[in-house]
Length: 334
Image (cartoon, rainbow, N blue to C red; front, side, top):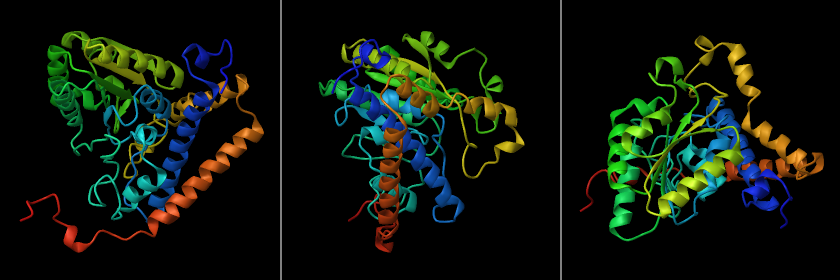
């Protein structure tokens, strides 16, 4: 497919088709997330922790990786990342409904602990930031095996204050491992605002202490995110070591379905965040670039809605895990 001459995506080497694919994944992430909230509120699933507002950061980052080759150790909000890397809406709903065929855990793990063996997606533990040492360990193992892969891991800015984050970055920096640590800064650690989390201006400022580049990027700009991650991936493949990337995002929902952000967040602040909604700004870009109009947008929305409707109905009809599987992967099976 052609590339618009002089367009931002064209300058990054993205065809028109690839640019529309980026938007499709952002839209799919948003609509899936919205459906998960409806299912939770109707009592069909237990828990949601939202990606809304962080789709540009997640999709832009994942587009820089090689699907099925590179590895991802995501955090709980990384719905957009795991979709781009290969997880399907059916598998997302299997996980949400805790059904037997769930690739993340066979219906046994808490919601949003994404995992998929086929697509090199590794589940994190429930304590925050523990996925960062896991990612660094995978990168070390790959180097020892002579594999030229890149490992992407992610966390929120609140999690970057945990010891695991600093220990992992120090090890990765010392050994120049092919890791990208993506801090998705949405300005809240549950209810704690950013001004009470950091003694420095940016999380990325800490990178210098670990001997690696620290990059700050607007997480609502999917193309700028893609550019920054593409450079970090190329750097890692050249053997030049890790990169810490901090994307500045907006959080458009409460921390989770168990939280009420009206108790600590001014409504004016949320309205301001909605004006930076990455889905809306990317949609505007596509209109201005001539890649989208009302008819094509409706066609895309209809396609996404059909995919989600079909996937949710199919997954809900699947069997629950058997009682006999309760202790599988917990104790050694003799």
